[in-house]
Image 1 (spheres, helix red, strand yellow):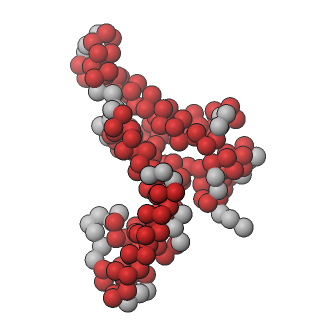
Image 2 (cartoon, one colour; image 1 turned 90 degrees about the vertical axis):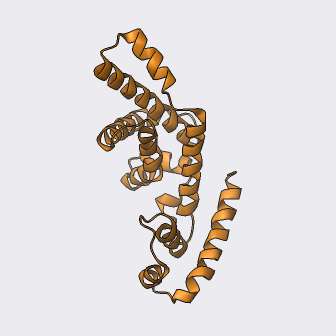
Image 3 (tube, one colour; image 1 turned 135 degrees about the vertical axis):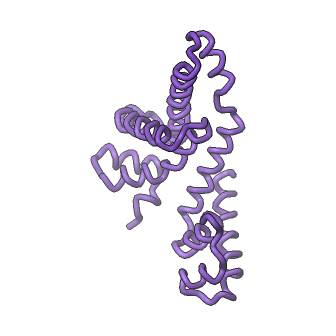
Length: 188
């Protein structure tokens, strides 16, 4: 039996609507980084980004029954999050500057997130999803080698994965090939 994290958006949404809490957790886990990354790109501090994240999740919970195409969920989340960030930015500008509403509107339009940044956020999400479809050992190796800050040395990775240090490069290469194939299949 497959895990909720492996399900399509259509299946996760259907299970969420049926009241499956595991599906809701899998849905949030799939998109949490995407939702959280957008406010950070807008310059929101972590606390405000967390507030925006919660607001988007609440909207998602309330609007999920009306979602027409579950496979378009990622785009919906980007639009809703961007909209909330736009309004957050307007409130910040208004509060900090004391400008009137028209001046705030002009400034916030200039500071809206660019299509290039949105495309980068979407690409990052594709990479996260592809990594999530890797076998567990590959997924953990990719996380340890490329997402740890500071980067983890090979001998620590070998110890953590219970592997010989000499095998890390070979296994890393196989894992990256699998990741590349998954990304190509997803249109990356």
